[in-house]
Image 1 (cartoon, rainbow, N blue to C red):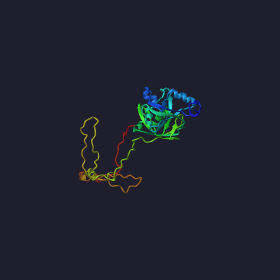
Image 2 (cartoon, rainbow, N blue to C red; image 1 turned 90 degrees about the vertical axis):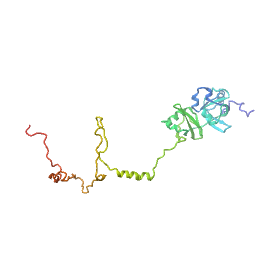
Image 3 (tube, rainbow, N blue to C red; image 1 turned 90 degrees about the horizontal axis):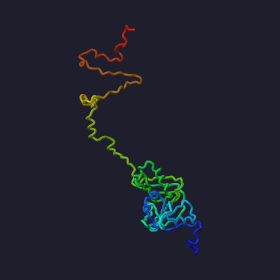
Image 4 (cartoon, helix red, strand yellow; image 1 turned 120 degrees about the vertical axis):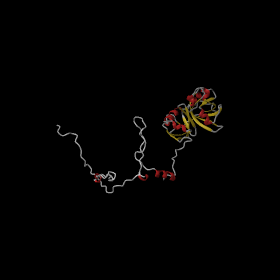
Length: 301
């Protein structure tokens, strides 16, 4: 008889191990506070047994589905469940591959305090959140521990986001109660880096032959276009066409004799035939050589 645990129920240092029927928190009604976090609801008899065993706080448990060989970890929120039952979040049931009423083994454990955790969003919609680290930090307040490989669910702006726990340090299962934990994110599932469109050499080096022919046919014409009158009328807004000799504009000739600090005025001389043989066309242009008028008349004081 000394080998059975019921002989000395109050001996400290013993572990708590029980098997319960597992149900989702939707069976309790409106308990979104449980479904959003990582804590479960246990029966009152579990609290009595944990108290006699002198289990240290915070109470952390390992949930194991022996049939599917799946393990996760959690905390406890309340001891108000029916005897022989526990109620857990729905996302936790999915990780354990449990159905309603399935058997799960509950065992108390002691976990190391977390120092690092890496998450991977399961949808690119998570990128729409302005400050994902702040949202995750606020959601993890309802969790007691994390397990590598679990897919946790958080709710933000009436939308559920799933995140896979890729890595935890210093162990595969850690406690996140009152800890200073560094958080990192992996690219979401289905996310693709934006690709840069690099054009081929045939498209970027030079225009096509058809475009080159169009450019050769068009010559630059100054002040060609249409404008808008202030009075709203359309008369006189079309510019008059300008013709050039040979269809091509005349290019200027650079002044190779230019010296720094000098200014040269060049004026195009008109032919004598265009002026009717006027002698003034033969004179060379001289800068600042004209006569002016005074704004103040002489004789007035």
